[in-house]
Amino acid sequence: MSNKGQIALVTGGSRGIGSAIVEELSVAGYTVVINHRDSERDAKALADRIGESLVVRADVADPDAVRAMAEQVLGAYGRLDVLVNNAGATMPGDWRTLDPSAWRRCLEVNLTGVFRCIQVFGPILAGTGRGRIVNIGSTYAGMGVGAIAAYAAAKAGVASLTALFAKELAPEVTVNLVAPGNIDTAMTRSVGPEFVESVIAGTPLRRLGEPAEIAALVRFLVSGEASFITGQTVVSDGGHALK
Ligand code: NDP
Image 1 (tube, rainbow, N blue to C red):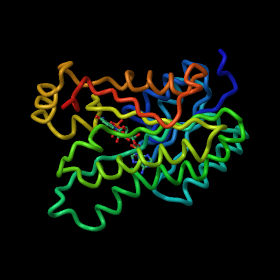
Image 2 (image 1 turned 135 degrees about the horizontal axis):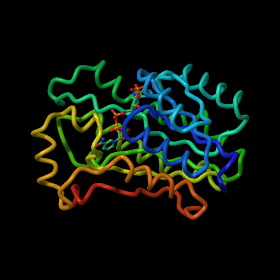
Image 3 (image 1 turned 90 degrees about the vertical axis):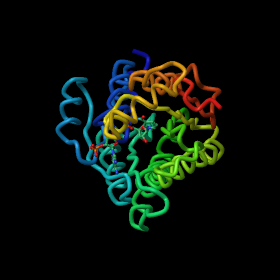
Image 4 (image 1 turned 90 degrees about the horizontal axis):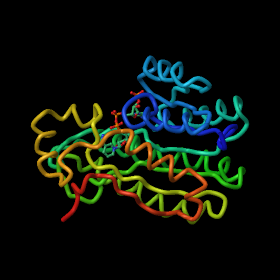
């Protein structure tokens, strides 16, 4: 495999889209570091399935934990080639009643966590001369949905960080954003069957997306074939966000 010996870190790799990305990159030959916060059992089961890998517990919202994760990755492999900032949580709450701590926590996980991981891992990726960062955003960043005000604002911030770091880390690292629509994971299903039905009805392709469809985009963006793409957003939403 051409990617043999290359190391990829997937934050929130224990479940959902993250675990699909872990599997996809593992099949492509990368050694994958699986980050999780709560789902240790899922992360370890995934690691057993894919073979050589490292499981690291860290809350991406905790700067000390992100630094400790970097020490673990460098201690184990001495390098990092790919960072996928996938960890995230919707944390719904109507803007009228959203309390300050819920707002803060949502921004810390979905936006500050991405910033911290790039701040810590960006220079390490740059050291390889061909590092890759893929951030996972959301089409909801620009759709004006009041029930997920903090989450949408955080994801809009991730788009901003993508542009910023595409310039700051060039030419050694490319930085791109994958913006999924509604994907069939616990995050989407937990909203309830009525939400899922209404989303499918409002999606031109008439279904939810699959985690593997997002993982395939990530695999492309970290590959040599995407070497001249940076600062871009790739949307995969079945047409849901079309006006
Ligand atoms: P899931 O809820 O299925 O999985 C979320 C993952 O993120 C888990 O592995 C979880 O790990 C991890 N995670 C959550 N908070 C933290 C944290 N503070 N530190 C480290 N890991 C954390 O979500 P999805 O797979 O659906 O979503 C993955 C990404 O895709 C998210 O960024 C989400 O915003 C984005 N997205 C999802 C869409 C969808 O329709 N599903 C649409 C658009 C974007 P653990 O359980 O171990 O805590």
